[in-house]
Amino acid sequence: LLAAETYKEFERTYIPEDQRHANKNSQAAFCYSETIPAPTGKDD
Image (cartoon, rainbow, N blue to C red; front, side, top):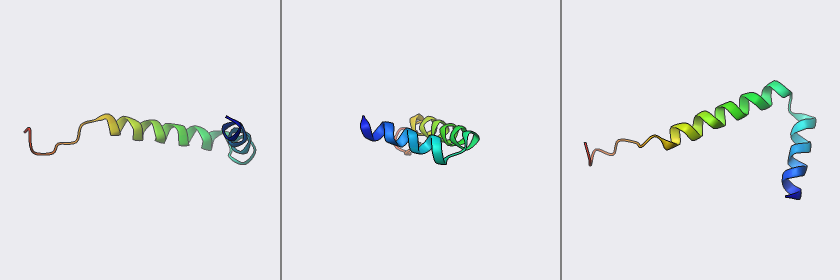
């Protein structure tokens, strides 16, 4: 928990607001693409 708080402080201090949002968006897109089942060719 302490590490998370420290990291938030670090983010707030060193990463510009718009950059933070861009990172969150790309992470969300990445997570979303991870949930899409990849075609393996077995059950086609």
